[in-house]
Length: 246
Image (cartoon, rainbow, N blue to C red; front, top):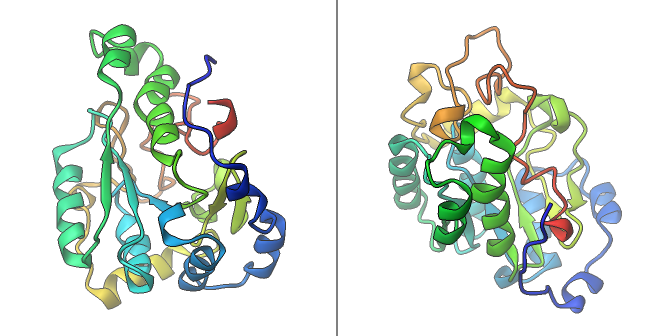
């Protein structure tokens, strides 16, 4: 993979934080709110970001985060292929939760013109499409940060089945506050906080990504079965490609 030029993260930002293994051990039974609070204590707010797709389960993480500190920066990857419903849901949650710093990040126009001029890359090479529309933009977006938070859960299975509460992406700490929560606990957060569902959830979309690579799922399928249906691909790459190698 061609290296992506990006600003270097200051060595102190990595050197001064505790090792991911130590944090993971200390927080292995912590609640999501406690994990997010620990992330804030580990690095200052300005060096911490939440990465959210504003998908079907995203409101739970964003609600817990907002209760801890609604000014934590939130990175949203607007790939150019998202459902209009997802963009509307982003705006709904920003207003409902009082999120103060949501940053919508786009792919570079020059990269799209050079590598996907006909907007067909999603079909011929979905890994390359994810790279230019999600992996590389996230690398740019995270350059100023020392740590980030995401909403992956072990119950999603696959490569997510054994994720730690805290890990490293090769450069910075990566907090997974919902790693050990259950689907029922996610549903309880929505119910107790009266959170609005994603507009597509009622239509059978249980996990929502880019429009060409997302389909409905039945009740007996895994949550993410509708992502890249019919392909061996199960992840976009932002959680599987080390940031240092992007």
